Each structure stands twice: as structure tokens, then as C-alpha cells.
Image 1: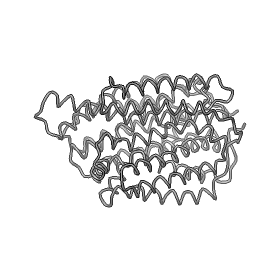
Image 2: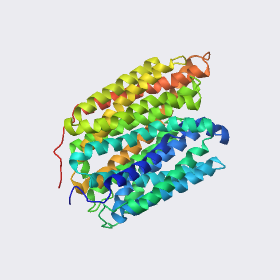
Image 3: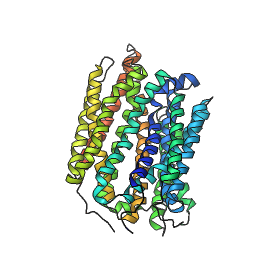
Image 4: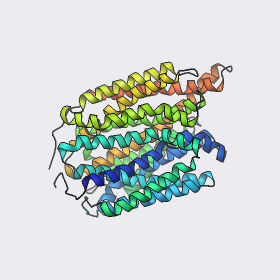
Amino acid sequence: MKAEVQVKNPKTMALILMLGAFIGLFGETALNMGLTNVMQDYDISAPTAQWLTTGYLLVLAILVPISAYLTRWFTTRQLVLGGFIISFIGTLFAALSPVFAVLMIGRIIQAVGTGIILPVMMTVMLNIFPINKRGVVMGVMGLVITLAPAVGPTLSGIIITTLSWHFIFWFSSIFYVVLAIIAFVKINNVSEITKPKIDFISICLSTIGFAGLIYALSTMAEISISSPIVWLPLLIGIIALVLFCSRQTKMKEPMLNLTVFKHLMFTLGVIMIFLLMLVILSTAILLPIYLKGSLLLTAALAGLVLLPGNATNFILSPVIGTLFDKYGAKYFGIAGFLFILIAAIGFSISISATTPVWMIICLFIVLFLGVTMVMMPAQTNGLNQLPPHLYADGSAAMNTLMQVAGSAGTALAITLYTVGQQQVTGGSSDLGEREIIAHGIQFVFYFISVVAALGLITSLFVKKPKLTSK
């Protein structure tokens, strides 16, 4: 199989897929800034509202592994159009939702559409562009993956303040319609349709495994891990994932080809991306809570505080993509996680109810400078080691663990945030709500500092693999 598939409009195809992925990933965190509004509208608690984000990520984590089947059963055009149409239906449900249950259903439907688009995007990029141009292309794609969930609170803050949170979904639905029309004309098929036998046992094990794991992590925000409601789903999830992995290694046509993890640089890249997504999604849900609840900023102003960090990501992603083609991934990984570690330690030391806004802006810029330096090099360096016939499996594996990390990051952030608040309220009853919120956020940044340190250690072992074209 050739490493590059000839299509008429590779740049147009890339743009359509990136915009579709951007809208879908924007949906991951867009409601974070409006969770307090949703809680008031539907009279629900914070842990319940959190499921709007965690549930979205959970569906992605469940669906993305199945994408390895989808790309072999359906053409690229069918998958892209299907993804856009399903996402449109989901946003329509959410925009019109009269009760929380309908909003949740809309979020789940939209996540199904995004779960189809994401792995298709990565597989298409690897197939339609030559290896020596992947740095720039993956740099732009890395920008989409990191910018969309990061910029979600900024854009949604402005939308919520000027209109209402419903318009987040109205705007998204319009984009999906436009993209579906363009995709119908411009998308060409780049996948090989082999129609392998579908193993429903693998699908069930994968679904049960990821669902149990993320449900347990999310429930820990309200209930102790000693409760059967927490540890039982966690145990079932772990057992199911172990059985899933064992089954894949014994199948002639596995649902997810785990031989991709025999390639060391790919495995290291996945670990780095996993740790990075923990950081991104944790901060994406925490900082809006802190800025609005502790510093008492409006949704729009809180969004603008995060804008410079997002702008750093936007400006530097293509630049780092170009430099990656020349210098490789190792030094970017080391420098990137070092910046993240510095920012996380800075947050954990400085966060309080009276922290100057300029300090939060500066630390967030440093954080996303690090994120930008890690994301694309880690992805591209890992995927470049795989032979072309494993691109779809490598893409599915990486995307799956990215979504699991996002779900786990969101769930752990809320859980640790709650623990941090309980810790401070147990020691003193004189603190106000602003101080309690700040302490909860500060407690989570200790965890983020540890994650950054692990990423830094991992990056020391990265090497530039021999590029595979056959």
C-alpha cells in the first residue's frame, strides 16, 4: 500500500475535516462556562451538570475504537456525511431542550457524530499527504485538537453573556449543515473497503470497559470509592478492558490492532498525548469555575482571560509543525512539559480569591505554550513509525486514549476539586465561598503538576523513528 493516496483536493478535504472536528471538540468544553446557567435553568447539582462534559467524552471513548471497523465498512464520504448529519441532529436536540434529559441526549448524539469524524480525519491526513509534509499538516491538526476544547470557554462565555447557552448549539448546527453540503461535493474516498467480520463481543467489552471506568471516576466526585456504586463499575470496567485487549491479540481480524503498541515511539507518543489531554481537559473545566466563582468575573470576561493562552496555541502550532520536520520531537516534548510543569506549579502556589487576573493570564500562556510544543510532535512522531496498513488502527488507538484521558481528566478534576473543598471546610468554617472554591482549584493543580512531571520524564526517551513508506 502506498503511503500517499492521490485525491483531487487534498487541502479542501483537510479543511472540511478539521472544521468538523473543531466544532465537535469545541462541544467538549463549550458548556463549561455555562454550567452554572444550566444548573439554574434545570435545578441540578454541579456533579450532575458535569455529565454534560463527561458523558460527551465517554461516548467518544466508546465510539472511537469502533472507528477501525467503520473505516473498512464505509467510504470516507459516507462516514464524513454521516458524522456531520448525526452531529447536526444532536445539536438540534440540545438547542431545543426543554429539560435536562433532552439536553443530555442531544450531547450524546452529537458525541456520536464527533466520534466518527475524529479518527476519519487523522486517517485521511496520514493517507493524502506525503511523509515529508506531515509536520505542518499535523501541526494544524494538533491546533484543532487543542484549540477547540481550549477556546470553548472563551467563545461560549461571549455567547452566554450576549445571548444564552442555547445559541452554542444553534451556531454549531448551522456549521454542520454548511460542512455537510461542501463535504458532499469535495470529499473523496481514501480508505480500503474490506468489510471485515464484526466482532460484537469486542464491541461489548470495549463499551463496558470504558463506560465502567469513566462512570466510576465521575461518581467519585460525590461518593466515596469504598461505595459499591464506585468500586464495582471500576472493577467491571478494568476486567472488561483486560478481556478486550486479550481478545484482540488472539483474533485474525481484531477490532483494534494492538500490535501498534509494539512500536516504541508510537507507545511513548500515546503516553505523552494521554498525559497532555489530562492537563488540557482538567484546566478547561477548572479555570472557568475559578474565574467565575472565586474571582467573580462574568462569563464573557472569564473567556477573554483565557484568550491569550489560546492565541499562543493558534499562532505557534503551524510554526512548531514546520520546525518539527527539521528537528524532530524529543526537544519539543522536553521543553513543552517543562513549561507545563512551571505553569502548574505557578497555579498551585498563586491561586487564591485575590490572585491578580494578569497572573492567571501569564500562567495560562505558559501552560499552552507547553501544550502546543508537545501535542503535534508527539502525535506525528508516533504515527510516523507505523506502516501505512496500521494508520487506521494507530489513529483509533490514539484517539481512543485521548478521549479516555479527557474523560478521566474531567472526572478527576471535579473529584479532586471536591476533595480539596472538603479538606479546607473540615479545618475551618470561617472561610467564604470564594476562598473555598480557590482552595479546591489549587488542590487539583498539585495533581496537574505530577502529571506534567511524568510527561517530562517520558519525553526524555523519545527518538526520531525511521519513516515508513511501505
